[in-house]
Image (cartoon, rainbow, N blue to C red):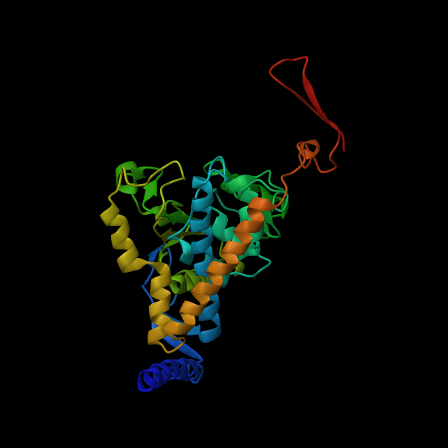
Amino acid sequence: MKKMLAAAVSRILSRVAQKPAGRVLGASCNYSNDSTFEIKQCDLFLLEEGPPVTAVLTREDGLKYYKMMQTVRRMELKADQLYKQKLIRGFCHLCDGQEACCVGLEAGINPTDHVITSYRAHGLCYTRGLSVRSILAELTGRREGCAKGKGGSMHMYCSYFYGGNGIVGAQGQIAETFNMAALWKLPCVFICENNRYGMGTAAERAAASTDYYKRGNFIPGLRVDGMDVLCVREATKFAADYCRAGKGPIVMELQTYRYHGHSMSDPGISYRTREEVQGVRRKSDPIMLLRDRMVNGKLASVEELKEIDAEVRKEIDVAAQIAVTCPEPPLEEIAHHVYSDNPPFEVRGANQWIKFKSVS
């Protein structure tokens, strides 16, 4: 009996002793400070040269990009869950699968550059500086949301970021109005995120030409691998430098893919197969591509990246809990923020004798 007990204790102690050894080994790994990777060459239109075909990734940037992309992915999956629980109402367009676009774009511009986008905007909201908490709170219609719970999925704003616009193509007119107001001093990069489908219609069925980067006619363009964060980053830097040099506007098409349907009301498998979606996940997933590069380039270990995954999950769960428990905006503020000074506002209901009055 004593021998059996001694053997059991010995096994337990050996296991306990092995775990710190593994942590010490991981902590003592000699990571590279940076590594150079080949990236896909961009297709060009009316351009003599384009972005580079190699990109340098530092360990610091790699870890930052990885965490940002995982955060966007987990945030969108949490939004899916909240929508199915009916805690998010109305339209909800998710961008999981397109994480390389928003993270790569932000990595290629300045924090003070101005960004305007369409309605699939959650990822850009996060990379522009909004917290996950403020995004999820906006989706659930709460006061702590970035638009005070009044904008929802399609209307989110922060410094140097002007939506989230619910009308298809509306961001183009807003961008040009903004540019004219600035006396045409702002460089302008028109970015098309081509996720291969317009709602439920494949691009090949809807367009005579799917070379969207050529749609500017007399405006130069380039087509970019939108599933590769480094390719997006380098192309964005190139496009921004081109515009800042006074050469005029440029069109940039990002070839990407969304894992969800067009919106939460679209199952996403009536016009494409599950095998197609799984094939993209298996071969071209943007987070997987970055992870493999970082591990193969000795910029990070698998264990380190798994720790980031676990940390992100916890952060998302905490933010979601706050988003569903913080208060909704009060009824008396329903008409606020329509005008800059919040004047008294009247809304007539279906019965013309019943009116709602809001007083600031």
